[in-house]
Image (tube, rainbow, N blue to C red):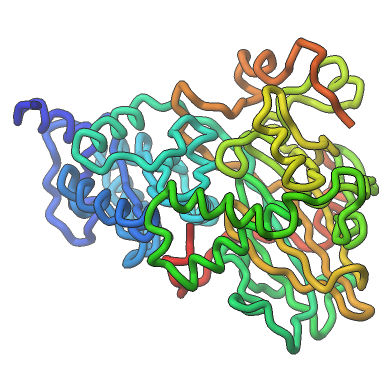
Length: 489
């Protein structure tokens, strides 16, 4: 057992006083500056009952005012107020406030959707010293925490587990990762249903906006634009269909989804019942990607070019981090010579490139269970564009960072366009078990190649920048002001 003096010393390393957290508070400063001041944001709806237990424990060991329940408090308002206070105190010569701002770290406990919410807020606020983020795995997939060494199993919620996690946060290394914007333009459906989720009930990270552009061919009456962001992946096809079925079932029967192992078992069961498990490995699916979409990519210093998608591909993933669907790496570890011959580079998380991978069906996805298993590596790009016209299907399924939706496709002479482009970076906290690799880390290249031949494979000018953004570049990751946090992973 820890003695009181030792416990107080530990807490002082993370403690933030009220005069920084609560406006108009008396300026009572601790005797020493904390080495690792933290703000903690918890989605208590994640992880069954674990989120609520974790909230109670953090509030019992830290200043209650530095631990926030996301069901009651929006992170953009919290961070805006705290950084405004820090800025005001710094102008008055408060060295303690200056030290807090320069060393502040954020802990977010929830699923990938919750973590993405915080990352978007930090990106939008354009803070003078954006705080790095550590993620507590409270969701089902937990791809973001797993990518940076925080694990994928739901954590302990007792005081000792919290102390251990805080120690990891203090010792963690900062790592920049790319941010990706997604913009979708479509004509809103006038009728029809995608029950149990309505036709336009998109993820919270996608929200409507209006853009006026003389060069935007789709900027006409009747078309709606949605924008948002992601940090791990965008996917379309069979994996998103299974995820949609899972989220729909959880929305209808939340009482059945209070345990991570049960959730994962339900996910696997749904994967077997969605019609993908026993699809032919040789005959194209009736809803393969090539039949419903024209795909274009923009490589560095280049223009849009068509990307040929094999007719067998039933699912496509645009991947930024090396963790997908609960820890798998669809890009894999490629054989160096073949990789370089194709003009590809190691899959760094901060190089402005996104990896594009295809899968035929769920059986093809099972190759990820094998050593050096991977999907069909299609391309790396600085931007990706999907164009949908009337064709083989009236809808498809899409997903960004764990949040799926059922996407209506054109029924007549109209176009649905989804465009993904690089948009800045955010800072994560990584443990020594981090799977992600940085282009600025000298040890990274050797970890991104497989030297054994046992892997099978199939600075812009202003004009370039305008071409890159002719469809519209979002300048905000903002979530809607009102949404139900219980539907966020």
